Length: 129
Image (cartoon, rainbow, N blue to C red; front, top):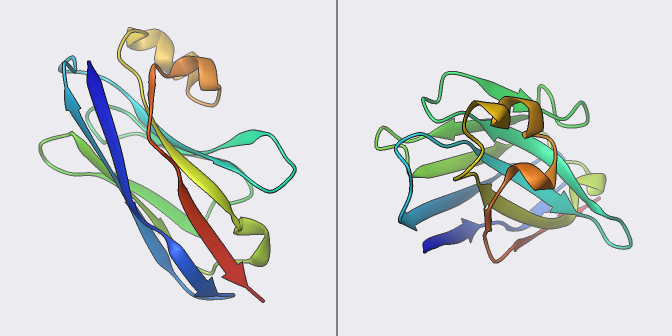
């Protein structure tokens, strides 16, 4: 089994910053992609950002490009989402996701929830305007 544990988030003012962390442990292949999704009130869960297993390729939704940054630690099992210049529309529950089974096909699926096998518990991010 794979465990995915998130931390961080909370309340920030518009224009402020927050950082989310996500740690994956358990039976993880040596190569896997990880990503962040979010669900705003009354909306579906949408892709935010993703990073490949080496940490040398990152992907972002247009809505967060230039404001959010995803990174990975040297061991590869922890990823971070640095969120700057926050806007009220960034208010959502943020979810970390881990791919274990898709191999290189993950590059075709990283924006889709189907590209991931394990999910974190979700973390509330609230941005006040």
